[in-house]
Image (cartoon, rainbow, N blue to C red; front, side, top):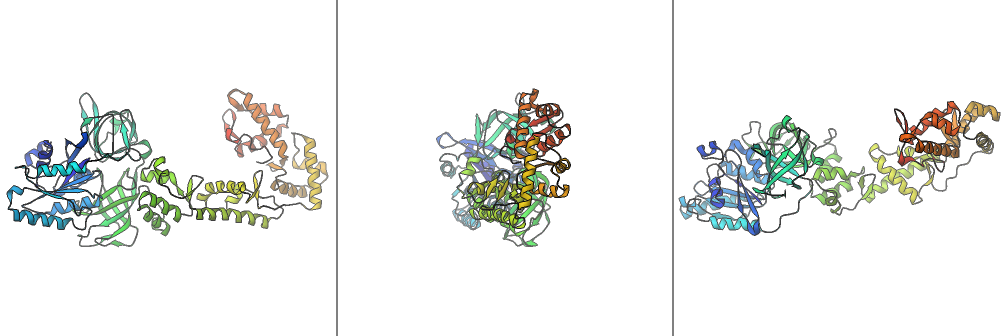
Amino acid sequence: MIIATAGHIDHGKTALVRALTGVDTARLPEERARGMTVDLGYAYAAGPGGSRIGFVDVPGHERLVRTMVAGATGVDLALLVVAADDGPMPQTREHLAVLDLLGLTRAVVALTKCDRVEPARAAAAEAEVHALLRGTGLAGAPLVRCSSVTGEGVPALRALLDAAAQGPAPPPRGGFRLAVDRAFKVAGAGLVVTGAVHGGGVAVGDRLLLARTGAEVRVRGLHAQNRPAERGGGGERLALNISGPRLDRGPPARGDWLVDPELAAESARLDVMLRLLPGETRALKHWTPVHVHLGAFGATSRVALLEGASLAPGATALAQLVLDAPTAALGGDRFVIRDQSATRSLGGGRVLDPAPPRRGARRPERLAALRALALPDAEALSALVEGSAAGVDLRWFRGTRNLTEAEASGLGVQAVALGGLLFSVRHREVLRGRILNAADAQVRADPDALGSTADGLLRALPVAQRAPGREALRELAAEGLVDRHGALYRPPGHTPQLGPAEEALAEDVEAALRRAGADQPRVPLLAERLGAPEAELRALLTKLGRLGRLTRIAPNYYVLPETLGALARAAAAVAGEAPGGLLTVGRFRDATGINRNAVMPVLEFFDRAGFTTRRPDGRALRADRVGVFEGGSA
């Protein structure tokens, strides 16, 4: 368990940690000389059942709230320190506001310096603290009167902290994330980074990425809660001894993220739920410049309000933070904003989407999606699925929330997967209905057509829905709600027929092409052989192509489906016997015996159909497309 101290300067945070652990966290000469903490200090003590309790001693000076945010982010419990002689002071209030904004709900209050005051004054200070906590997430936190000088109350305080540390740590969730708050070199070991774990677990030997530079690193050694370990995870502070070939060009620094490779994407825009502190005297206006603190990261930013032109004190609204430097945030991360001069905390909240689209930020459907993302995981995914006619990309949702595939599957959301997207049953039926309507409309517009290709039907859908639409079309065919004939789809019961004169000419065409074998004649020669006007023949060939009775290779070149299948089999055989599996023009011509001028149109048709892929020295057959022409479809 990690505990962060909080409270006003000179209220005894460092002395109290020393009394609890025996460790002086004032590690810098400047801190020792001035008697105040100016950077994060750390101490560890044995906890119940062999566990370790880590203390993060954060500074109380108002100019160092950024450091306080870094120390208080990712902790399990806050130790709020208030001196009995002073009572709550300005930094007490600001630290409490920060803890509340960071979502902490577990705390213990230490009323220090009780050896300096009368019991009545201690009681008054205690009442002031409880009043201050009222209305925050820390309301009702237990309070212990104590003195670091006499030791009064210290055992009782330690007992409360031990009780809070009881029980097994929750299992690691998602991919590993470490918010780097220190980086330094150790003689004989090399580069070491420290920080609080924000997700997942890590072990010696793992490979991670430094998100800011994309540099890959290897974990050479690991300390968890100030002890050597083979692995570490949530609820712990870690020190990682890392190495990597690109670290000298951009070594880690405070504010960086060391993460699982899948979580390395950075963004300079964050869609958030933002709350303005109720103590503010005026509303926050759209595009106000602020300082943003998220974990150990800090940057200047603008606040783009997505609902209205201003945010009233105490109110909450959707907003977008437009950062001056990118960070690898994720959904659920807590942040604090301070004013432009970085002297006063204004508010804060939670990241909803760490990589929002650049357009349409205020569209109603986008705002509805953000409100859904403000819900817990299962409720959020369910609301997104119910609200999105276009489907929800599960990989995007997992990445936004740092969920493994198993964790996402365990949410138990009722949805239908189509083409990598999740649809509600209602939206799935709407999608299927649009496809069926498109099939009906096509045959009404062209009664003699055998049907439409998949691409033709899917043009009725928005581009984003065409991949799931293709899967829905296959479902419709499997259920018999559309008939499939090769590559064409039509409504059940639709039986297109040519007129008597067209059918007679069509039979003559097919007979002539069968007699020709693999070397099918071009349209002018075919018209000459049949004694048919070329324009009339071309119109018929177009219909036969739509009906699936012929396949158009080129403007003057149609072949029978069985002939195309034979040519495809010949191509596969030639490639299978050739060095490197390559299909070349010469080998294909020799194997098929077709006219020299017909070879290239056939091979180019294979390329367009995805049957082959061009390479500098020939063509390679695509294994997933072998057999695509069997049964007479392209």
